[in-house]
Image 1 (cartoon, rainbow, N blue to C red):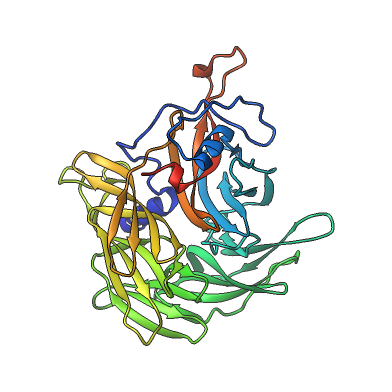
Image 2 (tube, one colour; image 1 turned 60 degrees about the vertical axis):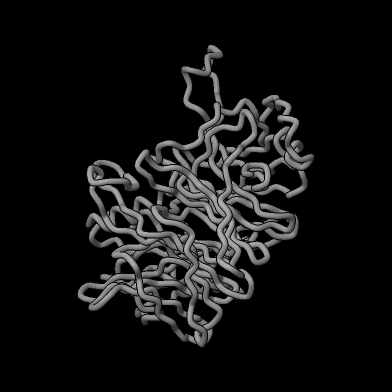
Length: 436
């Protein structure tokens, strides 16, 4: 794998969390209440709002299925319900709670095993559709890339999960995370980034039949979008890809329903985009950080392990109303890479990683898309709230929420917490309870 691909893969899989120095890390949590947990809550500090007091007192957490670190946390929210899709150890699970103050998480629902590269999910898609790749692709020369999709369907005995997959033709390599575009009946239309020998990357449309025990096997994959797929905005069906052939690299916005496209010149050799685009103020919004590869000894950079680091060129929002109107860029800041974005009204809440001479740190800001103004937010978690990892934001009926991984203390059999590894859990709180 080439150094640029390593950098992109590490960023896409890790976000800021692992390997970021100088994060605001309060003491490990003394508070936990999950489904089946009997830990004792601790009273929150008095300066919090009544809503945050109830949330922190309840301290709702959930232990996702699987083992090891969490690979992805994708929050979705609609109709007073917040659901988290979590990938851990190649197991995809789902947990939900009401957005009522202090509501607990329900039981963990396992959706599938053998999951890799979960694609972006529409912010309000409580039941999907979802798309991901099989982790076995590429392990053997004859192993073909396998694209999966799933939806949750209501039934008399509760929700059931309908899954299906499609085996891509031999000689086609999967690139990046697939996107579940739309679901109709038992068919889920998936956008799959692919690479072919002696051909530039492209995006193809793949139909996956869910609820079927036999994979579909498309004989051909005609190109739908040029370039490598980076993000998707579901409400308008807008795909954001990047082309880097002859000439200068560029970002390509494609409106899939009319198959019309618009190009925006790139500002750096490489780019990282939040995979889930959002709808704001009548436009599709994508948050991107562009960067070059650098040397850790040459100046500030985001370290990716070993001697590999990236030098951010600038963090910005790309706003697109339609193919007949030129996209607009809004600058958020320099020396940063994006983590997550949520839209509410005419504002975006953006989580990002800031790189400086003293290291990297988790940051947040609100961006008013009407005038481009940026308001920095300072993380100020409640007392006793543990260090977070993999944060992601989503808009709910009552405001923007942030979901994240959190480490919970766990004692060994002798009751000594210092001799046992912490449990890894997910939690979610309204942003107002975490920033000022």
